[in-house]
Length: 428
Length: 113
Image (cartoon, rainbow over all chains, first blue to last red; front, side, top):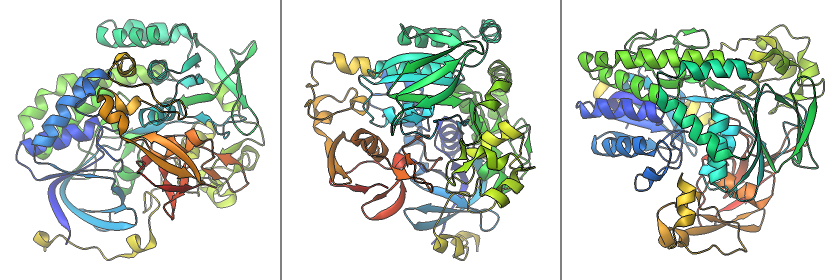
């Protein structure tokens, strides 16, 4: 039998948890599904209600997890949304098992991933995303005594540095590509939100005595069989730092695969939504990083708005609008402050792999006019990650837009894809 | 932050130095949680990890690569959140599992490459 709900929420990070919780509290039948083992998304990864007070941002997790547990919302962990076989029905998969779930309203809260850019040595074991390294440490990787270099861009670098330092790693240096002048301007713009400045200062203190150097970027990683050292530059001089791990990510990009599959209109790299978080597809709302990279608070506010809207509680949703506006302005300022410098387009040499799934080197892509041509001629983006890594890279490197989305949005068993759509019993 | 508190907690015993424990997931749950570790094998090599640790964390601690790329490069986990597919490995006979999304369980057998 196929289950059906008034509201299905995809993604159990802060935005999804907030949307599911408020709609369930308002009496709607809600299902929250997520491909991870537990709720929390990335920022609250590995948190547990009993201990969350000890984590940064932990109190928020504690209260939302408690509300979610009491709300009557069904939570399906481990399930991956792979397709929409017919309108109003999502197809899910877990360890080869298939399940269809019907929905009246849908909230998509699939969050963001890091943008990875190719540079010589970036495929060596030990080179990870900055957030990727943080996620692994949060899920049990022993960081004690490891020498770690963090490079790339975004406020995440400093947060990861603080987390790793607390986990016992030796942070060898944090290297931010954005110039100091731009970051100082960003800092000034936050004077009205001192909590963000305090948070940044706390992270910085945690990472001392490691240097935090702005206006510089990685040019290569080297080592025998795994990363042993990285070389950085500020455009004038170069220097090398020894390390066991390199965490390197260049800001975040939204996980647009599911919104694209559903037909949501994308504008400027994000899902276009109205004041109630509704996308161009009736009944489908998108929240959090999907509508602009703004972090935890924005996701919580937008999630609540979408949850209230799905429950028909317009006044409650409207009451959050001033907060939503303020946080969206923050998202815009963030994007401007950490905009990527053009030098980063020149890091890859001809032999540097750009597509890690199909091992397509930069040289093979140089003659291609667009993403589609690259896929057809070189297999770039045709591997297991479906272009999630090289798509975001080539968007920056070559200006290619990867606008297509076809099922499955994640690799799935043929039997999952081929099965007839089962309509929910109460919908027949 | 969390980990610091853990280290200050006198109720948590020092880990067996033979194994490279992470206490990240054990915060605040004291000695009881510490006993909740599990042993899995990575290419036949035993690795002890804290309960709740991801298989990708265990593989990284084992020193083994997760997979070899189509041109033969060794690869390890990268995104840590289930999108890059670099941490794929065969777990209990099932190929292509994203080990970063998978929680370690006692006796689990992981084969990489």
